[in-house]
Amino acid sequence: MSTVDELKAKLATLDEQLAKLTAEKAQVEVELKDAERAFKKSALNEIFEKMNALGIDKSEIAEILGLTVAEPKKRKARAEKGPVEKKAKGAPKYRSSLEPSLTWTGKGRKPAWIQTYLDNGGDLDAWLIRE
Figure (cartoon, rainbow, N blue to C red):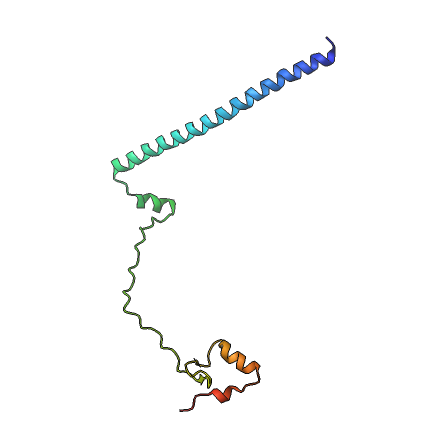
């Protein structure tokens, strides 16, 4: 075999070993995190048991650490709502002389019948309701 073939074979072997080691490294990292988490939980449980045995309150620990223990927030009660009155519609200011049932308060967008009248050269004052 030539030197090139030997080097290629050796490189392929090393690539396989690297893939196996990378997979093993990922597995060990996961196990390490799990072990650290279990160790911390065990230590905290042990500390909590000692606190309870000594009668130490969590607020005392927080005070030593310079923290404050938050009280659970209470929800505010909503005020009762009474019956709601409907808004009164504005009194009509303009009435069509062609169709008396068509009225407009003069507020908001002009109705189509008013706009058509104005586009054809009509005067809005002519339809003003005078009482």
